[in-house]
Image (cartoon, rainbow, N blue to C red; front, top):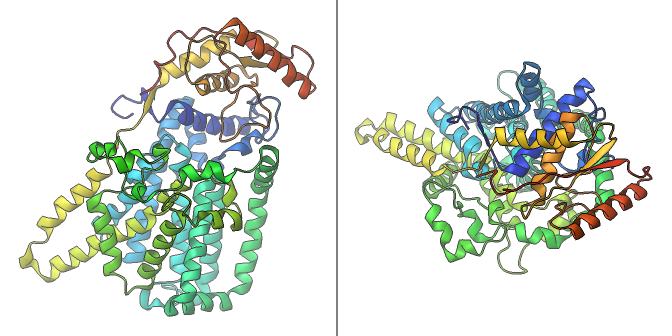
Length: 527
């Protein structure tokens, strides 16, 4: 993306353009620009209401995009710069956390923050741009650290005593709510991880004393902040619950293929700079939905991270991270056909039934990985100062270089000029006076989702909503997934489906215009 001068957009044709659409819809909603006059009613899947709740709304991470658009950047340029901004904020937030929580050197904190912000599991998911911003998770964890200061494993705060606890409790809840408004997966995994950590804290004497001490001293503050957070989260929760009622919750049969396998925790994917050849091993070829299960960090990074946490196990926080990470892996993994503990989580923990790609828990595990790497780097620095004759810095440089190189991934991209041209061609073909339109391309083959994305961007360009749509879910009974008219018979079927759709939603006949364009080379769009 950078080397092309922003001519190529990082990400995959469908999901990256969809997330750009979500951000652009939010910006146009601020301006009340038709057809984006209502936030939860996106100009897709016309006339279905509340379609924004079919996926993440990115609301709490959208302001940088809005500022870029207000400054004159085009939507795709603003999206590219937004991706860079989110990655930078991830790095910066984790750097501050590691510097303050571990009193780590700048080098150690930088290396740990690099693993969090640019670790291979995140890099492999860049095409799911909603999974890039995770900075509010770090904000919430920073507040917890200030609340339960690791110094002496006592429930105190640095430089202010107990009277600062109210501040950190409020910041924790604010970070959690902000993460919810950014991406549901990250917010749910944050909450679930903290639930597991709290249960382990009750087992560990030092952590139990700290947690119960804060709970006794600040019960009213915690209750008040929790109530305020519930009120702030309710508008989003209400829309999501309505969407769940409309489209139905996911059956576990759709979840099982995306549970991590034991091999998933080592798998780096075919795009890994260093480990791409291993993707052909039988153990990795057997992984279903492999594009969602590239959870490996690399051999050196994994050893360093585990070694760092294990070496610091006398700290309550390190013990808690080790136990929590291990528990999450045990719970989420499908160890053998039919052998997994996740069905219990799916059936008991609120919100778990809304998750399909459970493997995305790997990005939550970048938190303990970043701590482990920073702890190991800091320990090496301390040993170097104590025993300069060992020349340990000579070892540190190649190890750090290996950690960075192991995160390297070849990523998908698409040509933004081609994306603009395709959407504009559809926009120009929309007849004047249409209340809405359905784009049914004439193409020999291709992924139907490509054309739905073209139509959604054309809807924004012309200010006319579309029956086409792409999201994490689709309306119940929406018959237009395969919207390609490959023959006169298929074209006639689409016409009948459109008439039935208009009747279902009590639209006047011919309310929705048909748009037909020929796509002679549907494969020439992305890498």
